[in-house]
Image (cartoon, rainbow, N blue to C red; front, side):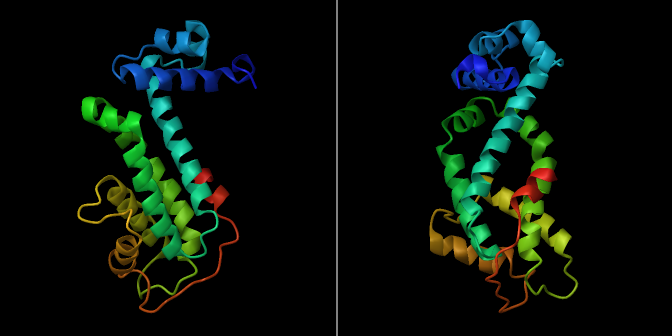
Length: 209
C-alpha cells in the first residue's frame, strides 16, 4: 500500500512521529507534521481540531498502543501468570531501553513528555490489568484478595518496575523469575499455587478497557 493509499490520520501520526524523532516534542509543529505526511494543514486540523497539543497527545497514545500490541503478541502463547509477568517484564524493559526516540526525549525534554505520559497512565493501567485478570483468576488467591484489585496492583507494580527496576536486572531470566515469585505474587497467590492452563481469550480484553 502506497503512502497516498493509507488513511490520512495514520499518515499524519507517522509524519508527526518522524518529526518528533528528528526535532523533539517541543519543536514539532502542525506544519511540520503536514509536510512530512504529505497533507495540508487543513487536513491535520480536520483530524486533530485541537491543533498541535492534540496531535502530540495522539502521537504519544499511538506509540503506547503500538508498544502494547507488540507486547500482547509476545505474550500470546504464555500459559500462566508467572510466564506473562516474566516475559512481559523482560520484553518491556528491553523495548524501553532500545527505544532511541523515547530515550532521547526523556533526556532532552522530560518536562514535556512526562506530563503526557502521566495523562495516559490510568488508561494504560486499565489495559494491563484487564489483560492480567483472566490469568490471575485461575489461581488460588490468598484470603481477602480480590482478583480485580490484585490485577490493578500488579499492573501498577509492573509498569513501575519497567520504568525503574532498581537493582533488578529484568533481562536476566533468573532474577526476573525471583522478582515475580517473591515480590509481585507472594502476597497475592497462595503458597504453592500453580496454574498451567491457558486463558481462553485475552487479546480483546485489554484493548476493550
